[in-house]
Length: 279
Image (cartoon, rainbow, N blue to C red; front, side):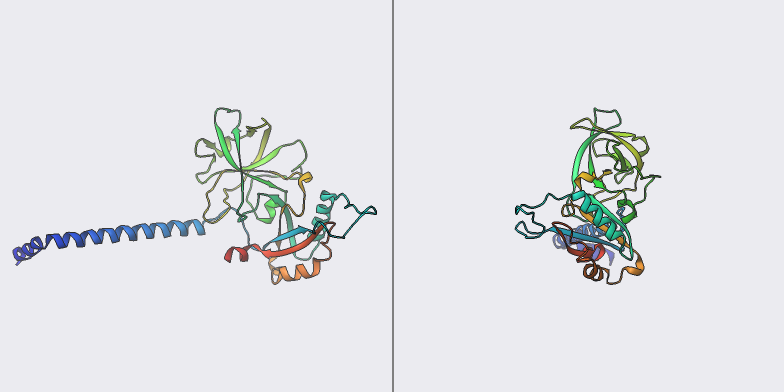
């Protein structure tokens, strides 16, 4: 009986070979699909370093250039004190019921679909250049996104000339890039490759990435200079209390539209960061 079975298999060896090959190809395709889906699922659900629950983005825009608002006697538009208007905005939004923290940033916020990279030397090693993800933020940025960090005091964050920064590691926990990296604790200062400016590292933050499927780059987080404050050209994010999060965007827009009509700026939109990710 067994001999007869083997004889049939041998006689049908060409057909059986094609069937076996088909099974192998199907197995390989399924293996690739399962592995890919597992990797994508892992990337989606792993922490990205930012807590975006109860956070909102506020978009401010400039009035049209031919707007008749705030003209001078000779018909020329007044010079705008952008920093003063930004501070007025900050005070008014901070005083709104339910708002816990307000932050300004450039290329700092997650899920913004734009980033800024630059090259630096670690410590005094000028032989190895590393490419870092750059973020310019106000001190409250860490509170808005609940970024875990080791900095004990941010009271002097952004004082001109101090050049104090916070860094975060890549995926493997080291600081640097694929070409060169050091243990996070060994990094004490960074030197810019373009102007040789030296920045002192005052603390570290958890690793972070810009989107669910992006890479964990090493980050250099530095103060956003107040001279760069421009309500229409910054990322403005707020964190609200869980109790105030119901219909917050609609309520805030309705009640604050007039108060945030500041100089050449007006409130364009407010939207929940989490809901935007789900669209």
